[in-house]
Image (cartoon, rainbow, N blue to C red; front, side, top):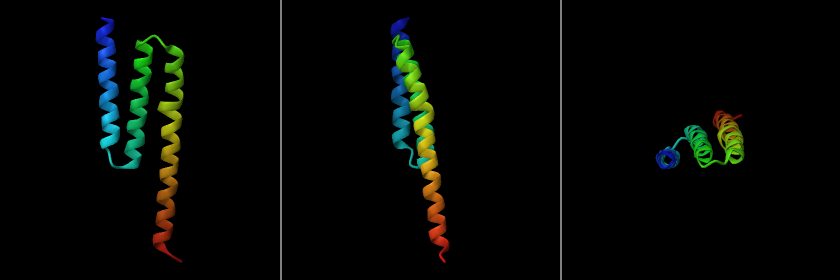
Length: 86
């Protein structure tokens, strides 16, 4: 049973990592990065590392994608302003 959970978790990590790489839009990449963080947190939980799972959940699933989304938003706003001109 444990081997099956580890295998399913590893497949979820591999699938979400592949999806994060294949997506071209930065906003969607941030979303997929969040899904990858969740999959990694589940994997760490299955591997009996709950402290690492909690850290991954906080940083990998919430904080990093949020910072990426805020950066993308700021860059897109700045690009619109430059297109409008003086």
